[in-house]
Image (cartoon, rainbow, N blue to C red):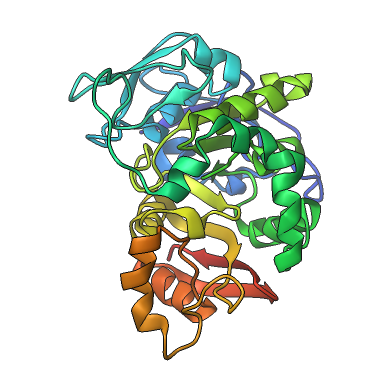
Length: 350
């Protein structure tokens, strides 16, 4: 889509970090127009020394609304959602909005404090079996305890703690600063809040399947008034059926989550689908060790699938298996940091 520049101002110092664009109620800005996200100006980059103040499409539709339409999609059809309500992806704007798929006509709302973009959103009688490890994190008690003692126990396995994990993730995400970040399996929003407060990203989507985790996420956000107006939105979705357009996301984070997913291969394939070229996937998880898995040795690992399904145990992998999975889903430049049973890894969409 062609666009025209409305106004410009003097060049900003290149050393000053300013997000390439803002999706919502503030004008589009950039320290260098050449750093604009590829969505801006119809995926064409400008080369100019002026900092842009605002961008408008030739159709007259504000560019922030165009970006929203290209981002959120129906989890059934993967078609853009039609929105009725105020523009913007901040919590207050999304809460006052209704969404509908332009193809299958399915409606989605955020009446419970989060935008429910699951396939089963709105169903009354239907219910389906989920693995025990998935249902565990949907319980009110575990959701309440997650940041109140549960996650602190991860340091026994080598996790360095949330602050250090956040710094490590930020290092991996340097190449996509200023873009849209999706924090999948965000739990109570521990890292979603850190990513938002950092000011590094134009938007942060806190996403989880657990309704109670998302309620806790909202409660923590409400304790920090500054987060209520920032580009942060809470979404319920299935990591194996992400409600985003293909190639629409710059960064995906999954903290201590991969071992909980019912199908890690489907999840990583979905993450690869929504990442744009050059987008980065960063995740942490527990590695397979004799302490957490009787099938950690090479000779016993063939038995893991048989007995693991019977016990509904977590999916613990070796670092080689994780790298192989990322490669099989089309991701490249695999990198890792390991500390005992803790691993943080990064992979990129070519």
